[in-house]
Each structure stands twice: as structure tokens, then as C-alpha cells.
Image 1 (cartoon, rainbow, N blue to C red):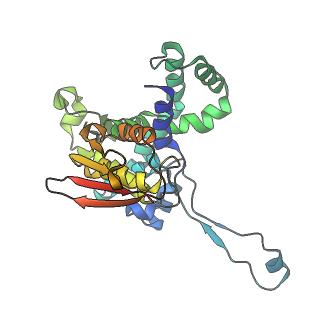
Image 2 (image 1 turned 90 degrees about the vertical axis):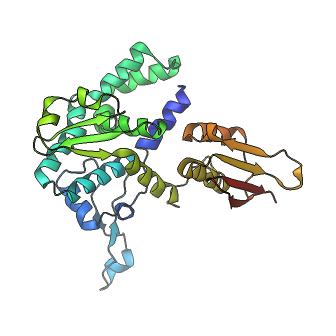
Image 3 (image 1 turned 45 degrees about the horizontal axis):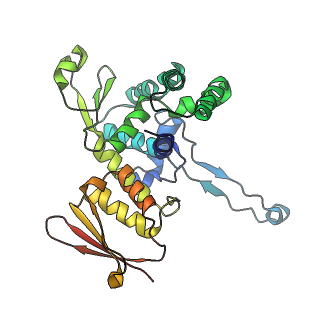
Length: 307
């Protein structure tokens, strides 16, 4: 994995997004309650903001109060969705608070992000350049940056999200024991029972499949018109959405007048990483019109008509 791919993975999980909790079937009352009680940490709470209104201040008319709504990045949105599912199972507030502490605060206090930095600096498993390594060393010595940024976004939970996005064929599951507040993130289904400790075999256990939750959040994010992916045109984003989420066996891309040979995207391009690389390598002209022909056996013919 090269530096660009590592940055892309981080951006997907950590970058500021404009995901509204309402799109995740979470009410304003719920999200405000969870943020107030530290069930959803590191999320700015909803607040009323008085706009600077000189004319209003000088007159009897009160300036209108604007509400700054809660917005989530991808990792936060996935966590909110998990809390939503556990709440549906009537898990009380205190266990949810304790679970949030374990998932978000414990790795922060245990300097999990620092250990990740040190691993890449010392082992450099991905062959990072000397400039990147030096940047990691500098950031690691910046206590304010580590404490208030990297330690809040790098933890086993966000690592799991990145893994689920880039290894979509592998099951990702959260196992949770409400009675003891123990949890595990599972990245596969091999020898599950053998690997579990006794606590998971002696108490009722909740199993939350995370792939559908993450897919739902990604679908919401892609439909969000306020935060476009900068490197994809509208046509490219539609193609990416079809290949990633509908998973057709083949996608044919043809141009009018046959002046360019048809391009076929097959199963080997279905992953986000591969498809993004393909689109970047074969840049599609903006303004092209997209026609989608639904075929049998989950096949889609995509025709791009250039102006």
C-alpha cells in the first residue's frame, strides 16, 4: 500500500463530512441526548448561534437565532448507527456510556495512535518515503496535535471501519455482552467460538453485522450533495455507485460513433480502490450524458454520450 492509498483510507474514515443524523433514522432529541451524555464523544453538540446583526441590535427587532445542527463524519456516523441499534435492544444509558468510554476514550488514554505512529516509523511496512516518516516523527512530538486530533480519530474502531470498506468481501462484526459491557470486533468468521473468551460463552451476546451499517452510511454520504468527492465528476460518481453497491457482473461503457473503443468494467474493478484507480486513469470528460440499461442477471450497460 502506497502513501496515496493510506491517505485515502484515512480521509474516508476521518475527514469532516456533512452527514445528518436524521438520514440515519436518528432524531435530534436522540443525538443531542447521546452527545450530552458522552455516548457519542468528540462530536460538536447542537447549538443556537446569534448572528452578528448590527441593524437588529440597534432596533427593537431581535436578530433571528440560527441553529448549528450536528453533523458527523463517516466513523462517527457508523458509531451513531451502532448506538441506535443497541438502543433498539433496550440497552440502558449507563452501559452505552461505559461502552463509548471503552471504544473511544480508553484507546485515547492508552496512546493507541502513538503506537501506530511508532510502528510505521520503526517498521515502515508500506515503504513510506523519508519525508513522510519525518512528518510522522514531528507530529508524534506535538503533544497538542496528538492529544486533540490523532488520538481522537485513530483507534481499533476506526481501523475496523477502514478494513470493512477496503475488504468488503470479509465479514466484520461487533460482538457485545450487555451484562458485562465486554465487546469484540471480528474481522472474519473463522473459528469464532474457539477464539471467544469465556465471558462471551456464559452471558447473552449481541452480534451486530457491521458491513450493512457501513454500507448504509456510505450510501447516505454519497447521496449528500453538499460534500462531493472532488476528484470524481457526476458521471464518474454514478458509475462508482453502481459498481460498488449494486455489484453488477459486468459494466459496458461505450462512446457514440465508435470513435473510441468501448470500455468494459468487470468484476475485477468492483472494489472502491480499484474503481477509483480505473476512473483516475481513464478520466471521463465532464458533461457526458449517462444512460443505464438494466440487463438480466444483474448486468448493467452504461453508455456515455459525449457532447
